[in-house]
Length: 319
Length: 258
Image 1 (cartoon, one colour):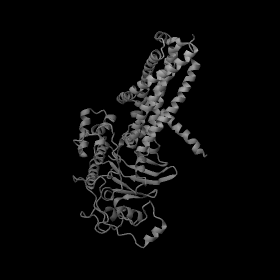
Image 2 (cartoon, chains in turn brown, yellow; image 1 turned 90 degrees about the horizontal axis):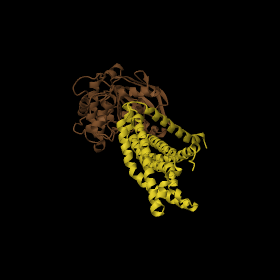
Image 3 (spheres, helix red, strand yellow; image 1 turned 135 degrees about the vertical axis):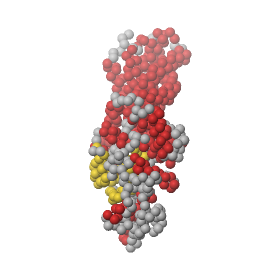
């Protein structure tokens, strides 16, 4: 289970403005990856290019041998059945209640009887904690519930690749923690490949196996979690630790004067790398690695205090 | 003026045409969305029937008044009925239908699809492996065409009755002469071309509205703009197409000899 997603030299611009170019990365099968980036760097655009909702100007996205941007529409609709996508606001169908929304993909794509549909739908509704709200319309529930309902709908077809567009925006910290745990547990259960687009740093530090960072129209870095969290690369260190010192300014990029001014300050020391979230039932995930494995293999000394369970999750708290 | 500014309207027209072709291809894809088709037919009928009937009465009346006055000056009062029937069947019926289909049904379709578009519902649908053109647009286009056909019939009947009432009651026309001259000028092909016009108008209105709705962008304001543009474009197209069909019809079908 789980499918590898291979992206090669992807580039997209709107009119004359380049959104990002030269993006090449591989989402390893069955692992959780996070795509980070300051607001407006085209993270959602990247997500849409992956599923073929937007056609990139150049490049390839290979999934099971199919090149998404250049395949026929019929193949595209076929390959999309491998995907489950959670949109920012859940994208529930406003004219249907939650039950029908979640049942929709099953009724359209399978010949399951109503009782089988009911069983699957209720199982997924239970998974996201929405039992009892089946008859509500999307307009009648809170944003967090819509998001969870969207997740339930994304899960009913047993997808091999699950994409999350900012699952944590607009949710309170407790719900975000539950959602992150749910993502980890789901990955342990169904082994699908996950890609989460977010700018929540707690999520990025504790959930994924891999992290990517989009900045200034290119992919600044993509690799294992420990590689980015121990990286001294200014952009990566600044973003992952929510600092003001670094190349990212209020409006995209800082100019040379500002950078020269900061040169004397120096980057603050990296905070310890927190332990990765583990599945709640204790069974290991396929992509799970021993803490510190990457650092040891590559001769990188992790910041002091890393991989201890009591490390504070809040970035900057220990600095 | 650069080439881009000149070619942009052409590009839009081309995209609209490509969209129409996609819809046409979608017609033959199975499964046909019968449920959506019935729901949409019912919805379009419910928003158009009453306004259409209300518009048809003054339409018929105005024609009866104008034609009645003119014809009296020529001294051919006995043909008032035939002239009114001809005008309503050939032009007034399809035009009134077009106005209502574009204004009521078209705007509703554009608003519905537009809001689905900006709420990312259409994206979600595509991601779930369902083509929104086949699932949503094709049933709407077919429903619009069918309801336009029926509305045309409704306008014709109500318009002719309105004309009769105004001619007989207000202008003191002779009821017998009005009825007797019904078939003096009008002939069966007039009815057919009225129906063809109505169906074509329904098609155009639904295609333009769906296209505008599905390409809406820029939040709630974008939906408003899409609705506005779809109604304006549909009106323009419908009047041009109406002229063309009328011109072709007059060339093809000889007027009835008296």
